[in-house]
Length: 389
Ligand code: NDP
Ligand code: MG
Image (tube, rainbow, N blue to C red; front, side):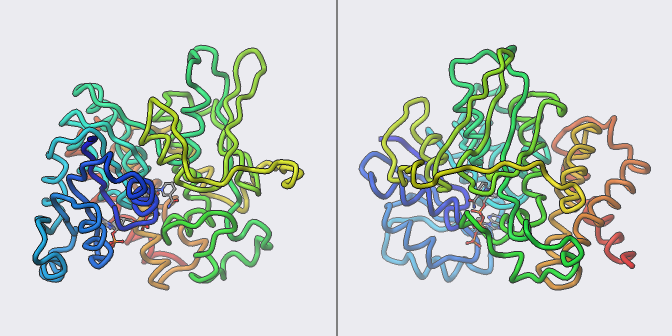
């Protein structure tokens, strides 16, 4: 039996993983499941999968979770430290599917214990890519991509030599506002930004798809994960979300990964890696689909993309600034405090403030520096929000 732990088990990615695992539950020994507010789901899954441990990141939900699991053998814990403790428990495979920078510490801890980490939490690569991958290297641990584009690139690279790679193209649906007049974007509401044309995902990543902050993070994620230079990475608008990424080689070949927009594919690939096993996802009927479309991204519509290019070029701790400022701006947009286009303004202003005054480029990417930069960037982003006209 394979021992597994799921961080962020109650989320969109976590639930897709549980769907796969529950179909073949006898093959897995579930060590820990972690979640947040949705303790009802967490308890139900912990019972169903007979987990050793269920953890909510919020101490105020401890009693409720404990009551829900009374009379079972599932141990219960709460708080960020309890999630990190769960990451010290020996497993063969863990899924990193917490949303936001909160996913970094559990991921780092799991890697320190040699765990194979299936990484959906792109924020940890954006914030601290070299730290995370360095930790994996130091402990002989493997990081597998779960973000669909990165899983697609990873699969296109099987058996290939990186020396022959000329470019990596990640696709984007264009998000909820791809057909809106640019002038209207400033007035986009939370409800409008929270629906995605093709994918069913958590709210934060859905809004990030509308603003293309998600794609911006994926550009940085591509650079970090595959070690390619920023000028080799491209974004292509592909409305159908069927080709997830393409790798261009020095003989002119493009290897495209085509599949249904269903996260169970990328999660399942990481779950069974290095094998490929049958998955319960739709088989595409390309004759029925008929045609696929491609467009260059409109940078006036998606200012987040240029910010990602800037971050990739600046390097150092600018990824930590970018992610923290984006998280802060997104919180404020969700709370109705700032407008849709203000999010990229806040991130740009935070990068400006911190690259001129806080010595980002030359600072080493250590855990202490990352944590301090994240903290400071949230403060600077708050100042930038206060200065919005
Ligand atoms: P969701 O918001 O659906 O789920 C997030 C999970 O993290 C939930 O289990 C949530 O608990 C938990 N959580 C929230 N805050 C914290 C915290 N501070 N500490 C610990 N746990 C926390 O997100 P998604 O599943 O959509 O995304 C998860 C990650 O995967 C993100 O990094 C996202 O960018 C990435 N990703 C997602 C894709 C998708 O299809 N959804 C595709 C590719 C990447 P609870 O809900 O119980 O409060
Ligand atoms: Mg993606």
